[in-house]
Image (cartoon, rainbow, N blue to C red; front, side):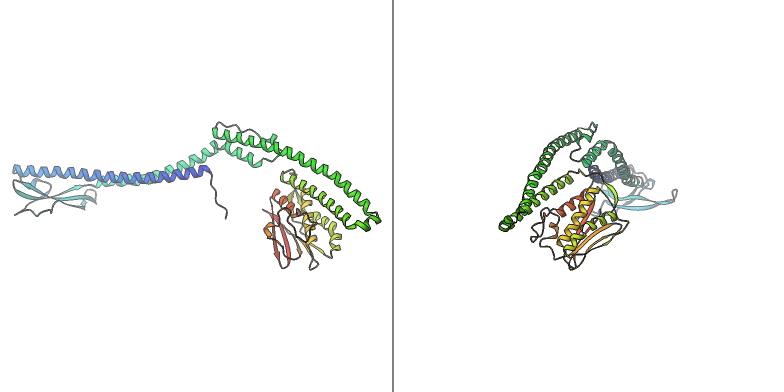
Length: 421
């Protein structure tokens, strides 16, 4: 399963939002705790002032009924460790027509050896509402901040990362041998400048190596054909000499076959190198039916020599966006592979529909794992004349043209399917 990827700015924003969320949540807890401490401290201070007022009334001999508290004179000794007693309660407010939250305190007050029980209530509704408002305001504040950060980063990415994305696009579209077409992206960001400089230095090294390797390969491919042509020509002359053939027929045949094999190998490897370097980029939309019919007609005689029939079921709707020369190479190799390894147990069948090209032939199962089928120089051990490059060429052509080739072995048939990605 392919691992999911994210943009750098998306990751940075996500981490920042997670950090901000915990920062907001921690701040909310801290502010709530501090607000509770303030409420307790303020109420305690107000209760102490009320107790001082009660003591003053008692000492002054003023009537306790004038106090807004319930004060009771205790008879006998005070109960040990019974006070103070705190409790929260709801008291109906007729003006507001609602119940408000109050804190109630029952405390023991001593004046001149006499004990008094004082029950006092203080409103804490305003404090609690302020605390709730503080905690409740942090959540929408975080939401607004998160949306603001996301929008800011979205628009910022289009501005700050514009040159970065352009450099990535140039990297993506770069092909060997096209250095002159690469533009210099103007940017004032130091990291992007360094990345672009590194990219161009890397291209310089690639172009240098490619140019020398290309020259060497082309020279070798060209020069090797001349001696190989001479060897084959001289061998053909020897083959026409019956006296020599009587004594050295096997040896001469080996020389001729190996020279032909080496010539084909050089041409095929040279073609593979050109495909890998992206030198075939004249892709056009091609209706494959007439092209396939032309190739089938060209190999029918060869198939008849192996007693193998070629059947077709072609659709006029099947098209490919591909270089015409590469399409010829792909079809030729698929058909020759089918003829080379096909058996008279059944026909070679070529089928197309609107999306797929399928080539199948009967034959024994592979002698190696199917995943190695498209590797270079992989072929059946019983066919030493094969280069083992035909299917590798087909795979390279498919990769170059955004095509996919699949293989399966089903009911004694080797089935190759070419489709669009």
